[in-house]
Image 1 (cartoon, rainbow, N blue to C red):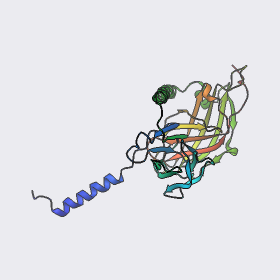
Image 2: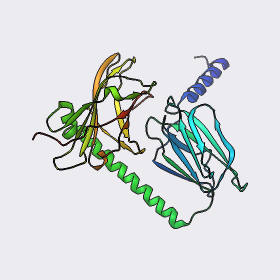
Image 3: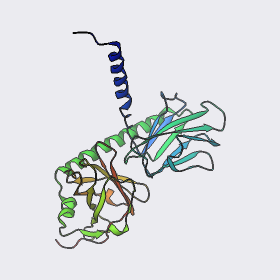
Image 4: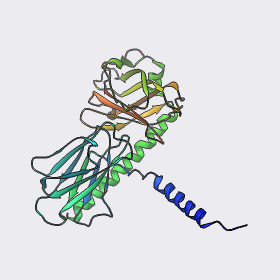
Length: 316
């Protein structure tokens, strides 16, 4: 067999390079609060911070940022940004069409001229889990404070794992409120909220119907559980499978929701899903924003101004 020609080898190399270049960058792990120590030496490249469309992220510095010394690259991808009057905080809100995996570089320059003179960060688009607060330190911090923050981060990670395990168990057996909401059983207060919602223009799905539900035991004043049932339309050429859901209340508090059923919504077809949560975390300050997303791909669905009915359960 003849060896490949130099042209064929070059073509193969170019194709391999193009394939590698086309691979999307991984989305960073997201946390509600992120901390970066510039005094300890900057990590290789700019740190990555999760950001979600229309959701604010606050940068808090221990040194004042100079006025007019904030840059974004590329420009035009933020709906709003503002530097605090004291120069110690920076607030950014990505546009409503900010896509998962999209990146904007944020660079700030400090007013005192000391090293490091500037800091840069990547705002990386995420379907839901945007980082709310980013703490940036230029001055060294005592070891006991670092240990305390490390212990808090580990406790937060353990809590997330426990919540995930609980949610997975609930999804396997959709009883309680999830089942009652789906079957419209007794003991649950329901409300049609379709006429009061705000929808995102970039939504991948159409909304056909939506009802919110709450369950407040007799004698109690706060709901023990809440849920939302949605009738959705998939105009796309591929099925859409719900992989996650979250509610963001009026104070910016975000909770992940259990979901049922797990059947995909067919291409050019319709389907229904129920999402909900039980326990103390169901006591949200709404109106809320509801977000749904799929496991693989950028197709998301977001509605705002979601509310839940008030009142105690009636019936058995």
